Image (cartoon, rainbow, N blue to C red; front, side, top):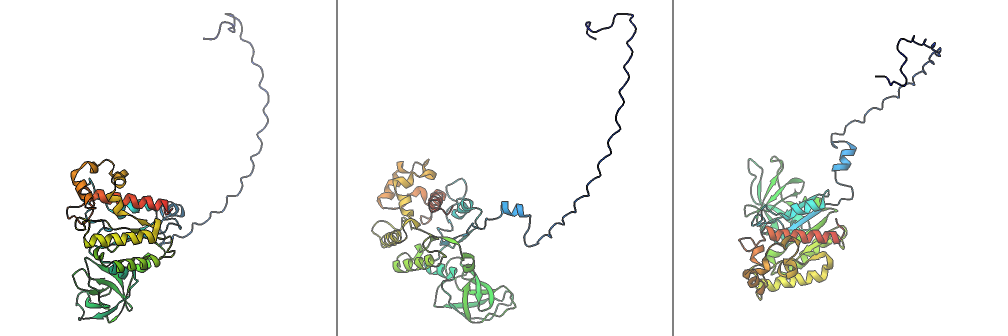
Length: 344
């Protein structure tokens, strides 16, 4: 209802409406500016999927240097599926920490330090063909000169002469399997293709445990791997070996292990990670990934430490590999050192 203050009296004539003021004619519309020409899209490069923005977001930064892991079964995390809720693989933890840099895991069980040199391409043996080619795969039995026995499931991509293929020692003897079965394999020099993968990369070395009693050889081979990087003073982490129940205090292998660890600690300084110290000291056994485990309260731990052996709670059932908890502690120690060195 209208307010009584402003309502007209009842029966009063309505007030006449005021005439409307004349309106000015509308101004003529300004002419539209011509549309800007459409810029054609750049053609899609089939070898570079995605857009520049997506590649910048998801692709490795140009400065993200690859990381290569070399060694034997400890580096391949054998035993890492034991005792933890999920399997702990060292290379997987390092891949998460180093992302977006690629991580290449080249640890092969049962190999010795000389096999690591072969994989890295630091030795280039003469290949001598011993058999006719397999009709289906073109594979030939071969021997290496200088002689080197195969070990474990070792399979190394590379070339013999101009023929690309795989040097395969997984059967207990050497064979060379060409990529193209029609290509004939003849005597020639073998060169590992993994050398190209390692070019310009940083590396983590955990090599030599399977021939640890050959102290001089292990030290020499590790040094050759160290020297092969782009910046030897900065590009390598060397992991020390850890004592198993088969390396009790006073044994030949324990003395060799201690000699190698001591020399490498002095030689490589902050680029050496003392795994034995990590897994046999109170500080190491209470590091963040192990803090919730009552290791030091267990009698078996004290018995093992008395023999200077890594505790049972960190070992796989074969007593020669680490279990998941042991691998988790090693992964943590590597990442911590990588941060200290500003690799991450």
